[in-house]
Image (cartoon, rainbow, N blue to C red; front, side, top):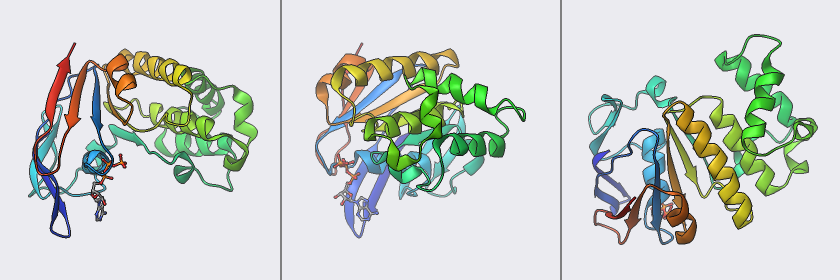
Length: 224
Ligand SMILES: Nc1ncnc2c1ncn2[C@@H]1O[C@H](COP(=O)(O)OP(=O)(O)OP(=O)(O)O)[C@@H](O)[C@H]1O
């Protein structure tokens, strides 16, 4: 990501933001509320077009000021949002949601959807019983883990976790993130962890970017 700019209604939120996320690493973004962390994630996912700069993924242009977001390439970037229920159909059982997603993207042959689903559930510490439930019957923390498991099906090059484990207690957060990290490393995928929790970011991340104030680039604080 090179020299990304983004403004809303004349208000500059990101200016000249450059960051590099090496393969297989976990990179943290830490900064106070409203500083632009989620905006950066939305630019990476193609939800917000940047006003300037460019993003390269494996040397290919994902989006730039002059190039529209490459949706096909963008499937290699998956994001888990702060509000996990928002991405789940309230009328669809968790298991049906997984089956539909797997069939739509051809992640497994017909009849093998359940096995693949159980495989990703284990990786986020969930039991298969959850598949019989509707979203309102599961807790916020479980919904967050379901959302992460759905993203893992894509074997993404980059997984963005935007406060995505905030509803879990600290030890479960570290546990789930450790499991997700190992899973991502199996295919050299990277994680962008966006959090208010400095201790969590310090504990888990190889590289940390601190967003300090609007209109300025972020500063790299720590490289392990
Ligand atoms: N679609 C939008 N239209 C107008 N302003 C927006 C839009 N999205 C974000 N903003 C503004 O951009 C600024 C940065 O928001 P952003 O959500 O990126 O912050 P954040 O650092 O992720 O905050 P938090 O930690 O509270 O989630 C805020 O002032 C917000 O109001």
